[in-house]
Image (tube, rainbow, N blue to C red):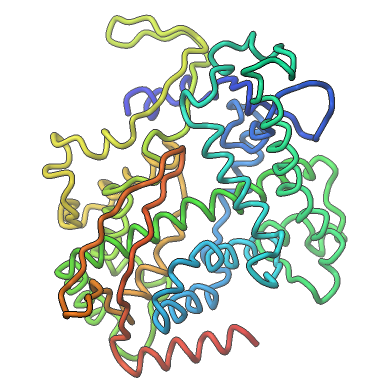
Length: 420
């Protein structure tokens, strides 16, 4: 925290990772870039980073609310659809970013970013590529044994290109027609004031920022929501306390809104604890020093690689007693303590959490319980997590029950209204 937060001006740079380095277009110049260096999450700190960060920092929470309700209604009707969370959340993110409605699970607007983010997780995992530590290897001929990373990077670069620019070009062509609506990024760039023609200087940052929102939003949010369901299923007393707070503040006659967030400290505590309990980016994204620095008598040279051990920071028993226990009460309703969690996970800086609506709506309308076997015994899942920059829990069964007919009616009504 001392280095990456209080000294962030020095430690906000990104290392030059050969396989991820900036390469805006597919090319045949022999480079081995996989194309992941363009989005701001891997950009060195500077004007381009700030431009994209400003776009990504917009508040998406007011958009696609009917889609959040639709997701909750869907898993309530059939818990098996939780396995399709990537499609469900992808629908929300893509609509918010581009105003595009997915045709089906094979829509390129969905499949391309999912593939790109899977490759991103592999590409940016610390130590994944020897060439990042021995850059001289980038000059190996393609035919030489051990040079397969060159062809892999070329394939991934094309996927990054398709994910970034195909939706952007589609948006330019379709915004005026009935196929899309202007939301957030789209509206700000292609709004009436610009005559549907974005400023030339904005085109690069806007396309890259939009793809960052879409790709990162899908993976990190997907995993976080799955971990939330797992935590609730294993901790019924936490659910019960959350429902009491929701019933006291909101009552049975409406669903939660963003305006309720300040009045729901225990819901906010649950959100923080979900992210702390199993952080979706346990080693964050690598940083590097923009200039020499001295820390506790040690000289840290410019360009040194810094890998934040987010997992340990959030499981240090000195700060989080019994760290493996899911305990929202540990924050004692202190927002400053809760806010540390997403800052650690998502980049040591401000980040808007769009997690609230799903958590509050699910806990207000549903009960999440362990499944039972044929003999009626509760089945406790044996969960493992994937490896990579972004981790996912293994598949698990869950039983999701509607709390009341009234809750079902409210969700159904709002979903129907949002579909019109």
